[in-house]
Amino acid sequence: MVEVNSPEKVGSVSVFAEASRLGHEQVVFCHDEPTGLKAIIGIHNTVLGPSLGGTRMWNYATEEEAAIDVLRLSRGMTYKAAISGLNLGGGKAVVIGDPAQLKNEAFLRRFGKFVDSLGGKYITAEDMNMKTSDMEYIGMETKHVTGLPVEMGGSGDPSPVTAYGVYVGMKAAAKKAYGSDSLNGKKVSVQGVGQVGMYLVEHLVKEGAEVYITDINRDKLAAISKNTGAKVVELDEIYDLDVDIYAPCAMGATINDDSISRLKCQVIAGAANNQLKDEVRHGNMLIDRGMVYAPDFVINAGGIINISSELKGAYNKEQAYSWTEKIFDTCMNILDKAEADKIPSQEAAMLLAEKRIADVGKIKLSF
Ligand code: NAD
Image (cartoon, rainbow, N blue to C red; front, top):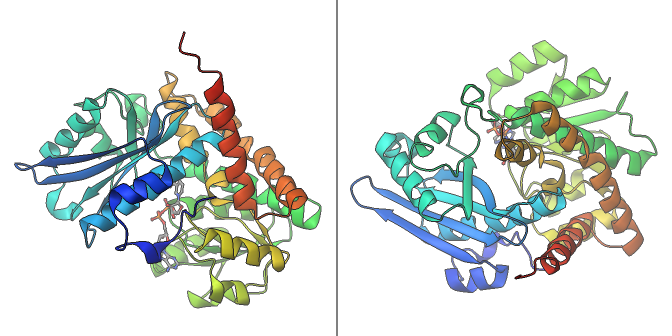
């Protein structure tokens, strides 16, 4: 199994070497002088279908950092789509620069033209610093765009569906750890109450969980605590709480040497991408401590499931939620396999995704 999270390698590998190591089909560099657009599109794998993944705009310190980011993110999308049973491949785009200074209609439409030039091999959507209104501009130049506003027939904000998937995935992990999927009375800590965390807290409180929240945004924290009764804790305190479940919903790599030695929970299930700082090392450390980890790319797939519904024609919210509900069974199968094979759950999920890609790949005959 190839590592996805190896931040220490950034800056020390060539883009081609990394693309080869991770198994990419194509990497597209996009440059446009008049608008100042610099973007990279990573197409990892299209065996199951066209590659789908959001466009992230970020003021990367170096171009190499942007390239490495798009390679890892696009590969992650391959696994996410495959394990979710979608007929989609993995892709992602990064746009380099400060959104406040660069993003305007012409800039976004030029990016849309680049997406269009790939003829549907890559379908874009929102990601960090990209909004549904930006997708509208991109959509003026290409039909290969998703995440459009609901009023335009799109699926809109994916966060509520993502949160629902995290919630059902958490229930599966709770069943594995505690023998019951009920979260009633369970103590759950949620790190980050942004778009996803906020909706997750609502589900948890509704089911009778005792919820602890933290966020760098104090105003958001206060508002959510007032509305739901969730208890506010300090940023660093989140790792030391005596809780049953920890839900990382802010940034990646929060499961590391330091946090694992502090966490008292038996279950980790959250929305953040790339939660394990080192997939192999920290995956194994969680097994040694008897902790159940719901793999991030499995349980945060509600967003892509929601978007995939948009691709089938008119967006169907009911269909998106019922597909997302399957995350419970998918997560359960993965946790059972991990236990039976004595391997980290993340590895079990990746093996199942790879098997699906290999099996479906074989039925694609040329004639
Ligand atoms: P968001 O930006 O709306 O929310 C993130 C929240 O985390 C913010 O409120 C921010 O203030 C807080 N935060 C940042 N640093 C923090 C820290 N050090 N400690 C505590 N809180 C901190 O993002 P989101 O859309 O809610 O996504 C949350 C995570 O889930 C991200 O990692 C994202 O990549 C992932 N994810 C989101 C979706 C989706 O549909 N939105 C889908 C899949 C994965």
